[in-house]
Length: 318
Ligand code: F6P
Image 1 (spheres, rainbow, N blue to C red):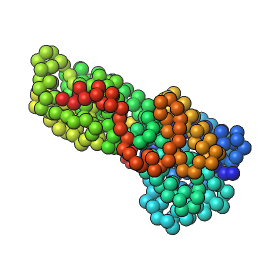
Image 2 (image 1 turned 45 degrees about the vertical axis):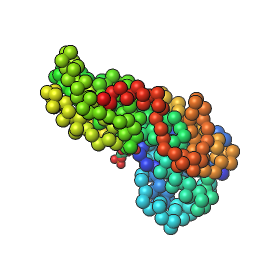
Image 3 (image 1 turned 180 degrees about the horizontal axis):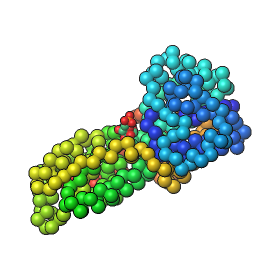
Image 4 (image 1 turned 180 degrees about the vertical axis):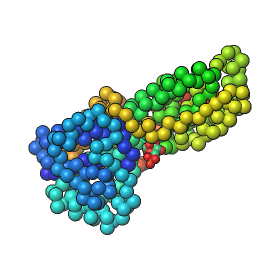
């Protein structure tokens, strides 16, 4: 049996530890591990190599993915998927582990229905927006990058008595912003999941200024598209204000211990699922346990942030 691993969509810290575990575990079980370079594009273009131990040495601490990733338009077309299938068949690869988000799992599910190639998905996205799992690889590292950045911004905010609006990633999901605001002690938070009241917020800030507050930190999720409005709000109340869009630094960085350990467990469970005969499952983590769900289950609902966390964040939205 040939097992291959690939990444798809946005890279996430934890992918390299997952690749390392995959190669070691598949080899330990007596199967041939393969690496698919450049995601779905590489699958089509036959950039598929037998894994050697030298490929995975010295990668556990590296961010991103050493086998690279891509977003592929061609894979939407049957004829390109057929090319990908032929590539796998020529090499005797009949099981796939995919590190990616729900869009990637949907693509692989289509591939499974076309050609009967089983896959197991490992949720990997800093956005933490996949229904059915409490955790996706890369989230803890991204949160720590944001924490470090906000801690450093705080130094200059205090020194200049300024307000800083920090825009964080997450696509349409406010998880990164919510957790970052709570754990960085931000004064304000805007995320798609929570209603906000900028008039009430302005009043609160005016009051706090009057009581002697010197600087402010506001965390805004990219999905709400309100960063500039927040800057204007601070300017209105007479506080010089700057916008910092953290951008792609949030996707980089050495995987944290949590991401390395989760990568190990997720990947072990993914390989075990394929060995046990699962054909199109995604490994999920909930209530401390690794489990499997189908892509249909994931698609059926939208990811919801824990209501208790949202309730804590709601205090910062008005
Ligand atoms: O899905 C991960 C993510 O980093 C989002 O948070 C962000 O909106 C998007 O990818 C950025 O995409 P790109 O790397 O294509 O600019």
